[in-house]
Structure formats: C-alpha cells, structure tokens
Length: 357
Ligand code: NAD
Image 1: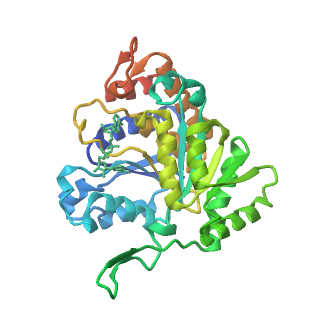
Image 2: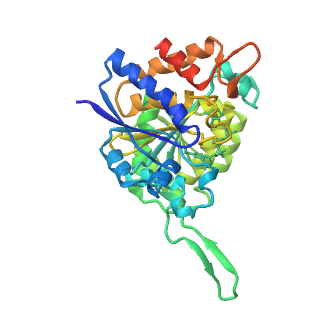
Image 3: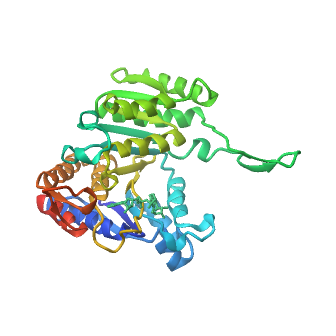
C-alpha cells in the first residue's frame, strides 16, 4: 500500500527548500519505484494568514493520517507581534505533542568537503558523525506546576518542574539503543544525576534497558562535562541520549561544530516510527524569496524519512551519496561557498541532486 507523505512548506524559505526536497521524492517515486502519495497543507504563519490559526484542523487531520511529514520551517517578522499562544511556532509544537513525537533525532555530520566551515580545528571535527537523541515531549518544558507567582513579601518567583516517569525514560532509551545498534554501538547517556533526583532515576532506567542490549557500550556523563567534551573532542561520541532541555542545548552545540546550519536534518518520531522530518534551521526571513537558501538539510531530512519511517535504507543512502557527489563536484549554495567552488541557487542545488539520483 502507498505510504502517505504530508508536505508542510511553512514560511520564509520553507516553500523554496521544500520544493527541492519534493523533487527528490518525486524522482524516487517516478523512476525508482518508491510507492508514496504526497499531500500538501498549511502550517505556521501561512496558516495564520489563511485560517487565523497556526495549526488548522484540516492540517492536523492530514498529519494524523500520514505515515511521515516533511516540514520546511515556520515563523517570521510578520507574526512576531501576535500573542505567543497563536504564533507560527505553536503550529510546530502542536504537531509534536498531538502526534506524540517523543524522540528527536539530530545528527551532526561534518562533510569533509566543508571542513573549513567549522570554527574548530579540522583535526578535531573532520569525520565527525554524532547522533543526538533528545526526549521531546516531556521534562521541564512540559512539567507541571509551572508559572510565576507572587510571594508573601511581594517578590515574584518563577518556577518550572523537571519531571520524567520511568516509562518515558524507558522508551527514549530504547530508541537510542536501537540507533546505536545500527551505528557504532556506543551510547552516552547525559544527565545531571549528581544534583537532580529526576535524572538520577533517568540513569537507573537507562542502565536497566542496557541489560537488553549487551552489544552496546553504555557510558554516562554529566551534562556540564558533555558540553565541554563536545567542544574539546567531539569524535569520542557515537550516539548521545538525553532529556528535552539538555538535548535542546547540546544538539545546537553539536550542530555548530559542523559550521553549516543549511546542511543538518532532523527527525521526530513516535512509538511506531511515524515521523516528522525537518531541517534544523528556521525560516531565514533575511534570505527568503531570493532563491539562495541551501536545500540540502531538507533533502537530507528526506533521507532520514526513508530510513526511519519508510524502511528504505538503500534509497536514503542514495540521497546521502548524491549530496556527497555534488559537494565533491564543487557545487555550493552561498552559505557554504568558498574559493574555487561553483555557486548555485537553491533550485540549482536541487536539480543537481536529482541529476545524480
Ligand atoms: P534561522 O535558522 O532561520 O536563520 C539563522 C541564519 O542562518 C540566518 O542568517 C539565515 O539566513 C541562515 N540560514 C538558515 N537556514 C539557511 C539555509 N537553508 N540556507 C542558507 N542560510 C540559512 O534562525 P532565526 O533567524 O533565528 O529565525 C528565523 C525565524 O525562524 C524565526 O521566526 C524563528 O522563530 C523561526 N524558527 C523556526 C524553526 C522551525 O521552523 N523549526 C526553527 C528555528 C527558528
């Protein structure tokens, strides 16, 4: 049976980069037998303009029916003055929570052709290939109680709650062990077990899940040390698993080791490997509409979709090989341009990938 893919272009450069990624999906469908049906819907600012809200019911219904979702990006200056409850970003958060996308996968890969883009020394980052698995629907970002209250002395006090149940830790640990099995079989669980009871329990649960995965070498690291080690010697890591907030911070740090925000994809998965796939960058309003955005993060998000939701690892590898080939051929969008290379537009980069495929 055909797999249903929902396309959500979103705002800013979203429609430009998604157009190129859809070309890649269409090529695999038309020429290589990928059995998919694609549908498109509104999210974010585009949905606010058309319907008054960032996540229309029609979009949510299609998202629930889909096997996988490809999202461009949401947000922009136009909607910044709106109340926080109806801003474009709420569309994204709504999709993540409504679809229970609890496992966020963020690879940080440094393409050897782009080693100069990193601010770190080439010997520290060349060959870098880390996967960060971040818990996405729990922890301090969602814990209750939360808020700002007034104390008896009239002073205001802000408070949030870090809370994880054993089952939440267990399921994210299982995702991380499974991924580690398919990669270098090394998993580092990041916590703050020396200070936070909640993450002391996190460590215990991860250690218990490890008993079922004897082939994976498990280590534990405090988050402050993990931040230092990521910058000092990132190649020591294969797969890292951590809480929502620690993962938010560490995955951005890891992304920047590669120096090129336009190259990094991500996946957010539910318990049945249904997923939403998107580049890690935002809607880049500063370059929207100019045809200069780098579509490779979105195209590599399609590769992740093929691997994690559509069970087509060979096609995923074909896309990744095509990205390597166009970089080897010297093609660069302006964000990754360097001396002696050939500058191409967003569309030019998409066409080059399709030609290699
Ligand atoms: P951004 O990631 O959009 O842009 C940061 C910088 O990187 C900009 O200079 C931009 O031009 C550049 N850049 C980003 N993607 C690029 C690409 N594919 N090719 C070339 N250059 C690229 O971050 P921002 O400027 O902080 O945010 C802009 C808007 O995006 C905001 O409204 C923000 O809320 C939203 N945002 C959305 C998401 C998402 O949809 N997942 C994520 C982050 C930010």
